[in-house]
Length: 227
Image (cartoon, rainbow, N blue to C red):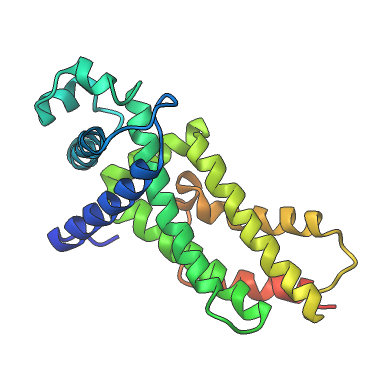
């Protein structure tokens, strides 16, 4: 993969920061709604953590390291996050949300269900490559999330499955896709094809085939869906 430029890194940090702000303003911590100042501090911790993870990697970083880098005490950080994983979860969730947004935009572009399906598969691969591998240090977070099956990963996978289900349902309604196979069975089978391109641990072993795989696999799946 090509080395990330400073511009790309800054743009990525800005995108994560924007997503984090939207998420934390809408969210709660330990069941208590936080005020603007607390949200600002929480965002500051996560943005600083994102930059620190980029430099040193997620696994090698401790909460004590973050405290020193940010200029806060370790105890103060624990007021906002119960663990390093909690910080990683928020960063990971927003990265995965960015991929999901790309995929939804591709699907909402119009056209026949088969065209939506092709765009969906292509965008999953392209966005996953961009967010998981352009910045190898942040890949550590994605790898940990996949290995430990974090809640952010489970939520992301469920949303992708639901989006896939919607596309397949549209195809059945228009008569473009077959209806004999139970829909849940079809969704589960096709998701098994998608999964290696959603999971960074598996995707890293398929980098040489990502240019052609979406088109080839989409064609094979669509032939199997023909009525």
